[in-house]
Length: 438
Image (tube, rainbow, N blue to C red; front, side):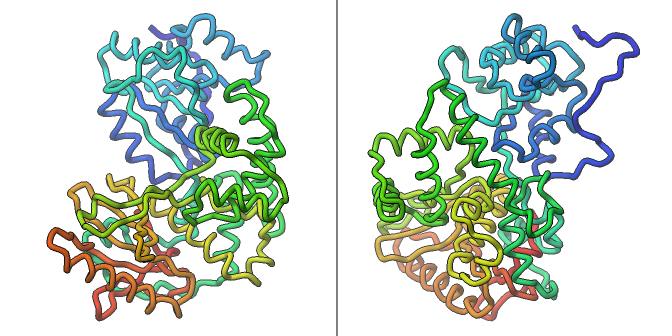
């Protein structure tokens, strides 16, 4: 049954002629073909609504303030009514009315058809009141801010999937300006921030953080959290971007830099809130998958959902980062690992990091669905490529010596300032981040 009247024009958020394609588009199509509904989750303003609208035929926006939040009120009174419309039907910000989840699951069961609904969510609500997980009915996808390829800042002449399968056509990729790389990181990958001037690049990320602290974090559990303490923790996370800082390290960092005290329970609580708001996008450790007896650490590598947030929190302007390349090295690593996640997940792979008790590290590990794994080091300058390749080779050799060790099938250095994509005589690939795509 549809509420659409004959001759009624369905207004769409996305202008399909101007829509900027995203890597996740193919996954959305595939999931719609296999599930009755899909849920696209991710940080606010990353493009979830635009992408979902592009793939839908009707929509309702539960977060819209029009007519005193009429859509939200209607959904609260009768969730089934807002599900009526041409399919796939977009229900934006479903978490504003959590019972929508069960209503979608029930309707999918009743109709017995694929491609019925597209839900978007920029936070994970308390499961209280939600009766069913939606397993088998609602497929979940995680959307991130734009990669350099999606924003048009990578030529995309080198495929990550090809690299992971051992293929690379050696080619010159052109000069890269360090100032451009810094700008990409400070600006971030939000669709609405593309094309802004260098001077204005941080305005949006700064306001984004303020909105999270002042509004979203206060509404997620209807609890008034301490805004000052949240800000202190976020600043500590920014200072520890791309590291495996423990909660103890965060606590000590806040004391050292801000001369403030926050107890451990508060840190754990606030980290949980930030994760549920998709503000954080930590990188899990790669351990038992290696099938090696080498003892490995189990700490996640800390990342914001976009490197621009870390830059904004520590006031790392383009001018400051140009004079502090050590700090930019961590920010650059975060930007590359964001892109690797976007590209790898498009072909069913997962991204981890590796760190063992012998202080050996691999910046990024990509595990393929057939069990093979690929090792990636991330370096800003070409003068760091030799050391990065040597590190990869040493770890591979150590694992190969073990009885049940399974070495990486591919080793690659992702570089910022390389002017070519090529394979070294030792077999290690070198690829500029500004030439990479999925």
